[in-house]
Image 1 (cartoon, one colour):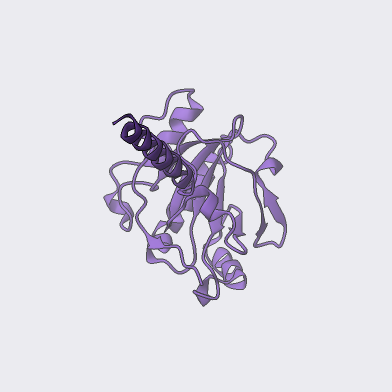
Image 2 (cartoon, rainbow, N blue to C red; image 1 turned 90 degrees about the horizontal axis):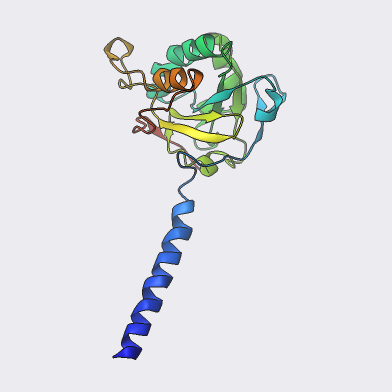
Amino acid sequence: MKFTKVILIICVFALTAFTLKTDKKDGYKVGDKIEDFSLKNIDNKIVSLSDYSSAKGFIIIFTCNTCPYSVANEDRIISLDQKYKKAGFPVIAINPNDPVAVSGDSFEKMKVRADEKGFTFPYLFDDGQKVYPKFGATKTPHVYIVTKKDMKVQYIGAIDNSSRDEDSVTEKYVENAVDALLAGKKVEKTETRAIGCSIKVQ
């Protein structure tokens, strides 16, 4: 009987350890500290979060050229950058898609789209798809709000509660979160479900 209990305890411990290891593969959670990254911007310059010495935080958005949900949110992303960049929370957009899988998301076409829309923020290419898995991003668009002083994730999810129709928005998740952080308050809704296209891999 004692031997059976010992075996059971060992099995439970092993299962728990395995679960803890596999959970980390899902990417950053709210409260996690992120690693800085260095990615090429559409102006061919390398951009890192450490470049922003005066920033209070970042609105990091995984997006792309081709997803209808991303296209439907482009004006909202521009508005977020225009509203919060001067307050210390600039938008950092990252295209996570493999251009071999989706030719419309090539680096050259990123330049074209940014010019067409007049992007006011960096539009970075996740070459080799090394950054988005660390975040655990699964959709375009997928938002991560990070505070710079501790590099911790404060919010993960959607821009607002209307994935396609801006006129139907009744709750602005990202704006509410950034407003709270700027006011020194706790973010009330720290996570929502990102709705969009799956990130494309080769």
